[in-house]
Length: 371
Image 1 (cartoon, rainbow, N blue to C red):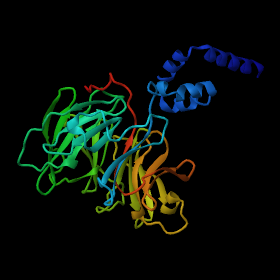
Image 2: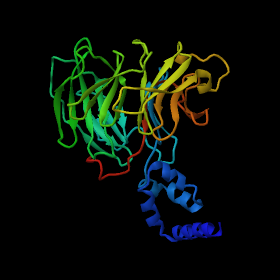
Image 3: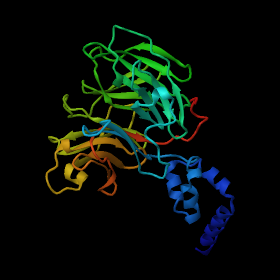
Image 4: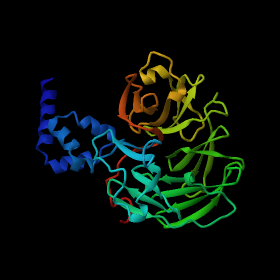
């Protein structure tokens, strides 16, 4: 026992004697879960990990939310906000670093630290920006195709900092009946758009605000009781059946947590929320992970109806479910490990119309954006 204690003290002494710069370099190579454990080593390590300059070099997790609210008594009636829930820097949601023609932009998507924005005036132009580094790039104009319907909400961003330094933008092409006919894909590597015909069933229609980029595939909840996906080159198309028992009229929300795809849905006449996990991505078998009563989510003893809150996302690294409490305009999180709910932020005045989870990206070299 004495020998083990002596060895532990020797290890602690060696770690304490290391220069701070070397400690930070070592910590930057750890997975996020291990990094969080290192905060408990001592107060000095906690201060190192929490230092604003060091945070930029370390693995990142959910830092906050970009969200838009609408208030008819306000001018302009739609306002964008950023709520910080972590230790990262506060971000100006007006994006003052963008060029003048993008002074007023619509935030259309957010993926792994990058944002997809659209100009507010015709001719509509799109850009991708990194608010943490204030770098941006304007996308080239799409090829015209009058035979298909192109809507603003059909643009989606795909990026994974751990896999590639390049991002992709998808624009879904639709028929008049809103079935998917194909996709235009922009690659930051080539700097150009390419068109691919749809590989899904010909009658596939998708819910554009229920999408997620995961495992190199862009996923959508479809109206045909499937989760459909397509890869970055438009070569691989897939349709995963929704969990067993889910009705055709019920549309779930997609989430990603701890490396797995999740499917969240109001069940039991909207008095509960069920959450399934696709443990093996190569299979079509969903595993029921949670079945939660609405009262537990809102810390309420009275009746809570499904329309009184809306699921937003899963926490990327923890067993947390984030959702909007529409009773009092707050963002809440339910910790399934502790079985408790807490308020994260307040939305303030107005109705919530969109919300995007944000994980900062501090690397300039890894993302080919030009200011």
